[in-house]
Length: 236
Image (tube, rainbow, N blue to C red; front, side):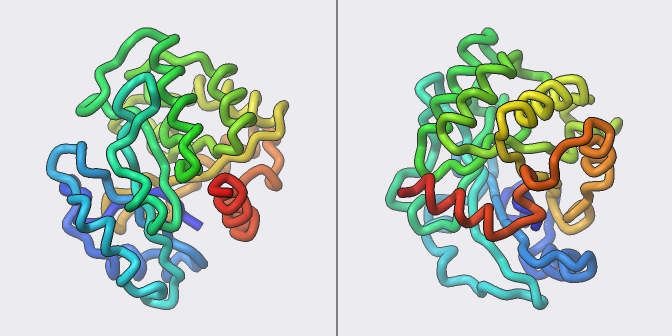
């Protein structure tokens, strides 16, 4: 599974369609492909209508099972996001994160509070790119929040790529992963691929997980049934 990817509907960095992404996923042997286009508050992204109508789209493309989600913007320290319950309940899942275009960096306490409160939304199954160096956060509080709410934390491929556009976030990711390992908190791998090129590109993620002996049973990408169970439990 790759649970964090973007099509042309996200409005930046790519003109690739769902079919283009699915073809790449098929080439890699992925069973599931999660499309998480940017929610409306991100400049140039998809409208509410786009997300409201995703349930009409094909569930299998190029032999790959497609999951229709969204990458939400956390709007404030209350953890509010930019799509409502009426739309989110029609999607397969949602991930949420801090983006400087929408949420200006604040102090460590406020940034952490925004993420932890977003976890309380029953449709937010994961916090994406928590390693983003733009935002100072308390990693222990973040992991504790994930544990309490049944929320995944993302190991972002972008964060451990030396040429990643957010900066090199390995130190924070290691701290987060070690805390997840200790607390038994599930993580998800996400390519954050804008277009087909980087879909399923987890090579650096695999290396890091091996280096710290992270338990494979806590990585939902290896176990789709566990992912769906977590989504169901949180929504209930």
